[in-house]
Image (tube, rainbow, N blue to C red):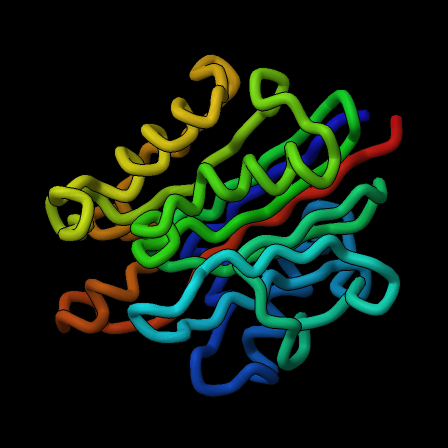
Length: 225
């Protein structure tokens, strides 16, 4: 089994519209990006992260089944903070615009997770909790796990105040180390979304520093070789 992980950029178009889950332009961008990697919209499931307020728990983890495969790509999806599949060929999709999209793969048990690690999640130990979910439900050994992390907002422009002003990546890496992940098993895209205009930044858009709101995305799936 091998894992495919691919990240879009601004040139691929926005992969999310915060006001319209059925935006035809976004759906067309998704279809084109997926097609460029040989997969289809219909075989892809969106991790439908939703903001629930400052004090809400951000630990809604879903193991996908037939009722959930293919949802969220042309409309609303099942709200979650991470989604998991054990089926080869099922594509996981997450749009982000500052937060970390982290792909976690267990090569022993052939389990794939896509988890949303934003400020709220990391304030609550979201990286630790993601690894714990895999360990509890699938017997995953942390030292076996492989992780890919997307571009994310840098510490200078997006500190986590509740974590002594750590950056998103700093907080996530600290938690992954605490969970028992080997650093050599982590592949990190070091780009800072707040300064690298190849990626969307929602925080910079809100500050008036970007003219376009939008999200880039990560897609991931297991190939049954």
